[in-house]
Image (spheres, rainbow, N blue to C red):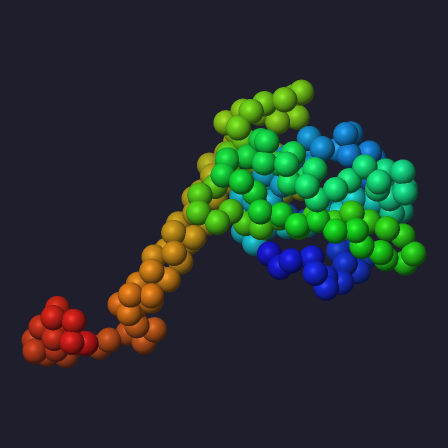
Length: 202
């Protein structure tokens, strides 16, 4: 997921509907939303390409949202260090995220971007207030779109596929760094060519 630096959030806000990669929250003080933000961050970290959380969107029902922005009073309770520390309190390994205040149509929004996990899926380290469950693995789910613990084989298989892709990408990078990965397949025609590959000549 790209950094928020230079991000045009118009597409995120004008969409008006949530997606696997996008969640909205209504304007509220940080203390009221911090557990919900933590849950969303854990879920986005376990979702391919991560996602965005936009605070300042009023729920109109039936998965439609209105861009109302955040009040100055609510916005003053948010800070990057607070968000990162809060999410890290419940995540292992840590979740990589970025936060910023962005303006759209004269209204201000708090936008959080969350990266897909780097090495292994993120697990919730402790439960709290019925909002988070210890040892749960959160992800984004469809019908209805939400951030929730994985509780079915389809979602678990999707996460395992993502973890496998990440591990394969790391291994390919390691082989490239060692000069052992060739972008084009080597076509072997003869026994002497096979022997040359074994010796490392090809």
